[in-house]
Length: 413
Image: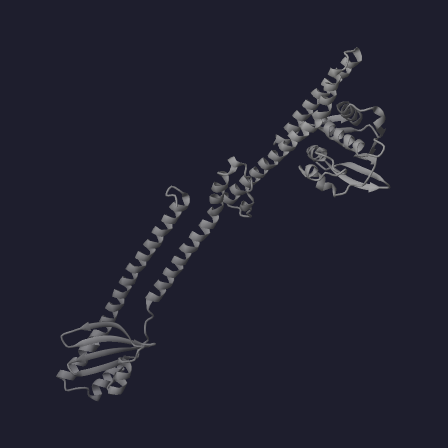
């Protein structure tokens, strides 16, 4: 583990905290043990001295003395069998052991019973303490220690879990230079700063991935769109130079200029993080601009629409309309398209075969290149979808009575 890393610092901090807690626990337990021993000695040492004094100086254990001991809530056990049953019981614990001039003193505990064990020379005494036994405070100390230690360990685990997206981010960010934009591992619903940072990085990586794919499509679209005017221009240069050919060649260059401007607008769209600029334009003007870009005959487009004002970006929306018209003509049986309006919707109809796949499938950037079918719309629908979305429109499709119907629906802003 890198010693400069946050995880290393946190791990060391938690280890130090645990060590300090363990040391504190040990000191407290030792102090508690000494207090218990001091308490037991203060309690039983006078009883031991009294027993020894009575036995060796006052003539033994008479009934009066035993009565005095019973009055103190103690019971003297004299039977050897009973004494052995306590002293040799495996469950018997020695709480303290002290040697005095008079002999040996032990405090024994069996379950909830406490005994004072005294021995001098060959004589053994066992006195049972009938008083209520004070609970061992060390149990509560150990319980508090266990809670604190468990809390520290759980806190460490939770902290590591919270910081794990940060480690993943570090590993993933280092691969961005290799165009590895897969940040799905950072998918988290956490609301802490690290989780939110991971989500933002994931979203940024996804946007970079989308821009990369969009630019790949953009380059392919350039090759596709420029092919026709370049071929036409090369053909015209080989013909005899006439006024008509010069005019046609000029149209070709105008077409190339329009395409370059179109591609610049598309590039601006796919790389922009801001809303596009929109104004009110007549539908008829947008259609005329789209037809000029396509360089098609007026007879190819049948207009049956209300000349509405649309709140759109003129250049981008013209490109979307151009692609819709181009696809409709290209894949129609009669090489014609009809443009209609219905409320706020703009409709494009052509006579032809029904789409083989769902419309959403054609939005995929490389679908057209993978599916070489007549119903493939090249790269046009991908561009159409993104331009319409940027202008608050959506595209729907239906097939009715042999007609393909594409509808640009106005969405709520």
